[in-house]
Image 1 (tube, one colour):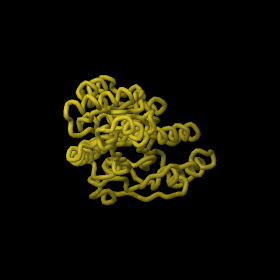
Image 2: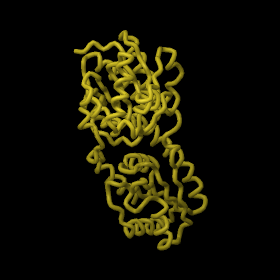
Image 3: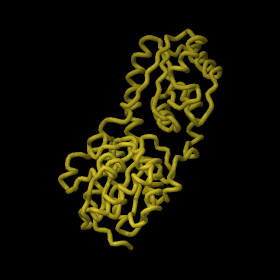
Image 4: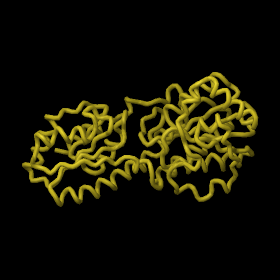
Amino acid sequence: MKNIQQIAVLTSGGDAPGMNACIRAVVRTGLFNGLKVWGIRRGYQGMIENDFIPMDSSSVSNIIQRGGTILKTARSKEFMTPEGRKRAYENLRSRNINAIVAIGGDGTFTGARVFMNEYPDIDFIGLPGTIDNDLSGTDFTIGFDTAINTVIDAVDKIRDTAASHDRLFFIEVMGRDSGMIALHSGIGVGAEAILIPETKTYVDQLIHQLERGWLRNKSSCIIIVAEGDDTGGAQALADVVKQRFTQYDTRVSILGHIQRGGSPTCNDRMLGTRLGYEAVEALVRGKSGVMVGIVNNQVVYTPFEHAIRDEGKMNMQLIRMAEILAM
């Protein structure tokens, strides 16, 4: 077991509600264990540019309820180069930091793996921070619950105006490679159809479904579309459908980055806090090169090479259920 005395925490990639709760837990658990804790601003780019700040208990006061990340985040092309990683390593060693807690997703863990291979004296623990909930080794990722609740709140409001005007709304949600946000929020709002990257979209079948709803005198229809759906997104799909199905006044709403923001839900505050605590405990016990996750309410450690985007994580039974309930 290594003698860890100084650790650093960073957030990398897309921001996610609950990251601040995670940072708070890392800092205070580190201090409890007698460690000096540093924050690295702007992820790996800040590590290269020597953007380190000392963290104490007051540094993380009154942040658990805030969205985004107080440490800011960035995607660093320079970290993909040996020269960039060398500069990052030299900055860490100049402060005697020998352990990192990295909060992020695929790219964050890939960067950590490469860095550890080159500089094995630096330990890394990863925490799953992404609204997409598409990583192996954890039932839920930090930010997912807040994102789907944000979508549900927005769509409930859109449903009110859709019903008032006999409108068909195509609502695009985030999910370039994963339909988890679309599926869970679509079920939550009772969408008439949910279109995701994991399944092929058949426009004829969708129109037939809309026609059935019209015959049942449905006053509105909500179609949830993940941005990575194979039709090209909500606008492209709406353009095709409204030419062939004219009964409804067709509108498109792209929710965009509101899904990343906002105060985290209790679930995300709890998840971020629990994972931040477990990350430091894992480092103290000598673990490295793993992502900490929660599966069936139990803490699990997944090697970085396995904690990647998991296309098999999509619950096909939920997809079938959603199709049945939309009839």
